[in-house]
Image (spheres, helix red, strand yellow):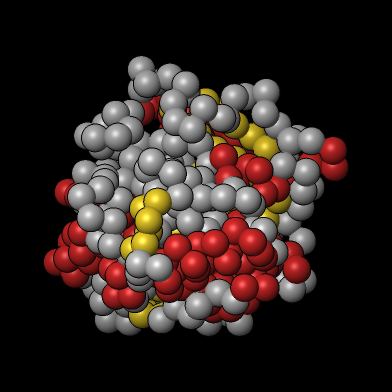
Length: 323
């Protein structure tokens, strides 16, 4: 079974009238339940990441600042990034959800996990939040894997329509983390040019594939597979993490890109193929973007069905892999 890490605590991150809203998780859960996918997973509760675990990626002063803003009732980190009184607890549990998933996979209880969390994380840099993101959930998990000696090489696959500048910053000089991003370019946040490929000991371990808005879904999938079967496989990761944004969907109001809901199942199967070859199948996926509620829910369903391998639990009832 796939570990599904989730908690209603994530709904307490109240952003008001904002694209990154609690209704995103409500819509996802409702659709997964209707499709029989929610019950096909093993539910796992997250825990709060500790300050030390967050500080492996983020400055302690920044972590304290987020806590103080939330404790004061909320505010903004920038024009796009809203905090409420419940945002700090939601954010530390979002990061902690991935740490729980790391433990699940390290113990062998599960092979893969989906973390349905918010706030998202891949824009959060070591020194600050932006782009709806408070703490970099995937980066915290990758650093935890390395620091605990659970793996030697971590691949982070980021298929969100926006470049994960925060994740890139966290590992730009880290040779043990390969960061691979497909994203619309030029576009927010302005980073992710192909020439951005790492520095120092990490030179070559950042792979950006910036794509224009006119890119076809066929070309997107071809480029994605080209990297996974080439440099990503050569890197031979023993863990694979996915920054699973679903805003590259052609109907997303913020991304306006090229993918269909079913393409996320295809992307997932390509990642699973690589993970099966080098990482004993270990894949942890974390929700990032996606702002058309219907398309988001359908795309997550395609993604989760692929993680489940087309099976719906012990009864052997086949999952419906259609969105």
